[in-house]
Image (cartoon, rainbow, N blue to C red; front, top):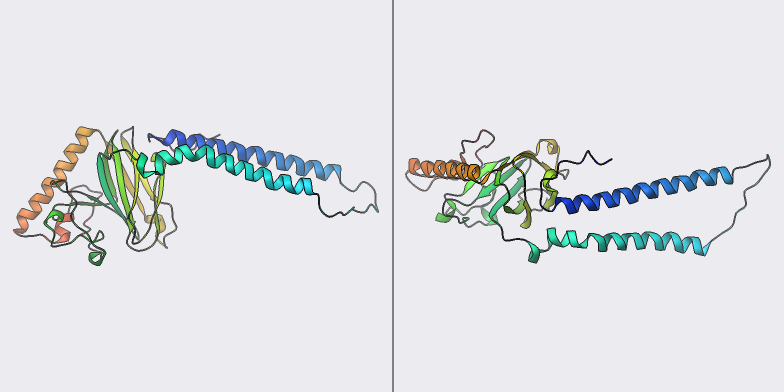
Length: 271
């Protein structure tokens, strides 16, 4: 009954799917039970003769305690049962050491991605520098930020590696949703929120916005390319070489638009 779920390619996805299955089947069982009781009462207490009147009475303490205590017990069970999976995904002390860190910025209606430059260091950023042409707020006076790699609506990662996403938004609340990775996290303006995942399979996967963020919400989709390690190394080296060539061609500290130019046909200049 649950074959319609997107393919799971995440290391922790099996635990998430298991919880989904448990909650789903509990919900189905409750739905069936309630409707069976409902139909039984309609038949059992229907009016049998013309002129019959309903008998009204107020209160039944055992019934009222039962339908309050049983849902409470169910919710406590689900909270305790799901805590281990929640810890593995969300608790910072259990987050594996990342092999790759990517900054992600949501904007109506784009996803911006930022990788460290060939020096392996992210350039300094500050909120006062954020603009439509500089979505991450990279400090133009920081040399470490001049070779940072920027892409739009296109994220690339290696397979079987822990990826740490540092997530924020420059306008409204968005939701960074990777169905195949079982990741969904709100992107909140003014905050940086960490979320991690590890893909066990190469391929192209959807990145969507799961929060209604405006009239163009349906446009806010990106592509996640999961490569083999060799393919990812080739891709990142090409991007770094392109940035170095742009810097050399500029003959000086380049502007943000020059740094962002990428050969990938799904990428557009952002800075």
